Image (cartoon, rainbow, N blue to C red; front, side, top):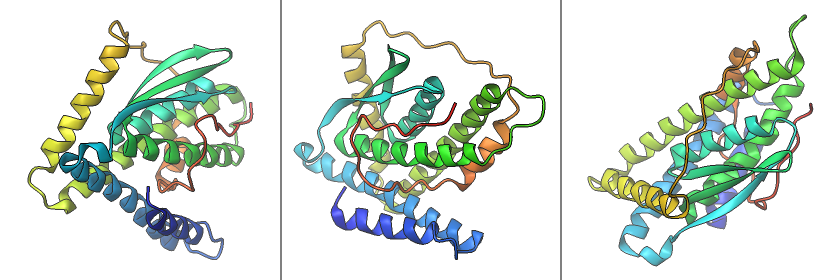
Length: 234
């Protein structure tokens, strides 16, 4: 992402996080940051359609560590999919090595957003009261599931809005082709990939996690290393 674009996003986030902001003002700043991130993705895709070398397809590994490693991995997948990236979860110690595939600009967006959302989720969980009689771990897992689901929905909506705003008839075809190429690259590396079974979570934290996901800032806070994984208290 260009420094100019990143500077705009950081400024919006600083405004959104200002305690003096009203909830409405904060939401406006967050929405604008999300819009810029989505628009950047469409712009890079259109540029790469004309100049393929400007945005090569590739892969990278993101380490996701305990506690709640599987839930953090689910959040990463929830961010990656709407941004046209694919990820493969591999067990690594008590956590996971998430192997991401995508175009360079999209991988950059995924890492930026995921790092920010991990921090936001940690803060949200710290302030979420576990109901009396409920197991804290079960509550937090379901909270993270709700958070991830709403984040994915918001990202899909932002991406669709950026496509509509671009006003380029061919943009949908360009993006579909990028998604197909990413899927083919993944299949080349993992020809026998299996889909993990759907989890069943018993905790009652889904609704408050979803509410936190609706408030979450999807603009990111800066570029960090792939190994970064802020902790969520167990």
